[in-house]
Image 1 (cartoon, one colour):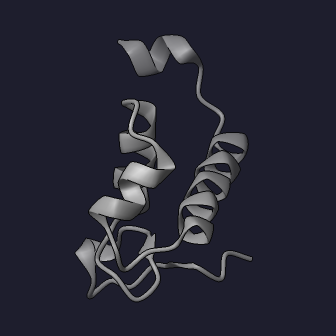
Image 2 (image 1 turned 90 degrees about the horizontal axis):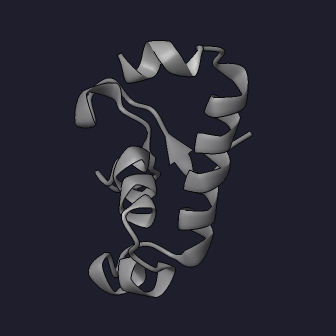
Length: 76
């Protein structure tokens, strides 16, 4: 389903990463949320491609859709 994302218990403690790297998906999503641009990420991480970044967003969206938690619980 996510060909550019890998989860390996021996890499980054099993966190979802961009395949073939040790770059966690959450790091890419957080950097975008903090205002970094796709071009800035590509410059900072020359081993990844725009498609990797887009797949990180699709993966995060998938997780957000599948996980049900009231916002009040997350904020407290």
